[in-house]
Amino acid sequence: MAAARLWGMDRPETRFAWNGDVSLAYQVCGEGSTDLVYLQGYCSNVDVNWESAALSRFLRGLARYTRLIVTDRRGWGCSERFTPGSVPDIDNLTDDVLAVLKATRSERASIMATYESTIVASLFAATYPERTRSLILGRTSTGTRGASRSLPRCDDSSPRSVRRRRRSTASSRPSSSPLHRHRRVDAARRRARRPALARRGAAAPLDGARAARPLSGERD
Image (cartoon, rainbow, N blue to C red; front, top):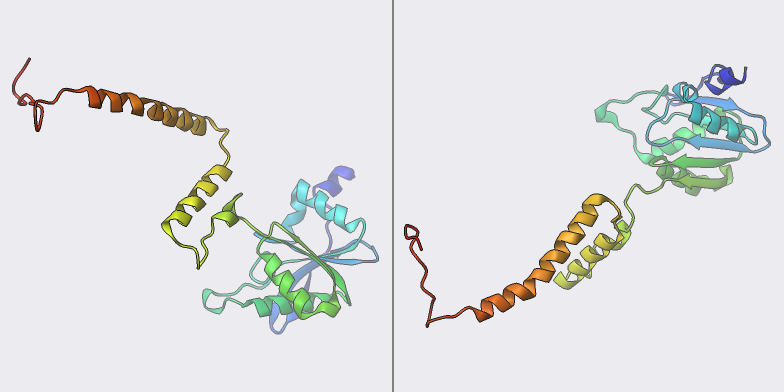
């Protein structure tokens, strides 16, 4: 029985809220005193979610302490699709969350969102503060470490500043891979050869303006 529950055999019923003529899929599970709306970013499907052991365990863990409301954004999963010519704006997506709250009879809920859904959750909290108990945001940035330090400023675009930002970005990148170690060793060897090459060039005899060089067809 435990294995069946883990792999999603005992999944909640999928229902639909309506924002105008657009249907929005959602599920409700758990009997906690606090409502928690989960806006899954990147990809979402309220039915397929329970087929993943890790995601199913995560959702059931949330539902253990809350009344969990999981919904698919418009255009994703089991919710209404839209054509490339009618892409909804953020305001419509925010109103979709409100429609789901009304359908589940939730007066006030905590909003938990990840990835691009954090934009919708933040706007919902700012637009409907009376319906927002708290705001939980995860994975709000997909940039690499140090990317914020390398972003150019509109008032600081001199060549020196650009070089400084490049060095800062390069120093923040991981350097433990074999390729990075090989590049560091190769660069150190080139720097070590520079003084020797300079001394060799200074010691070469010159007979005036230019040293004589043999023609391409001549041999020693």
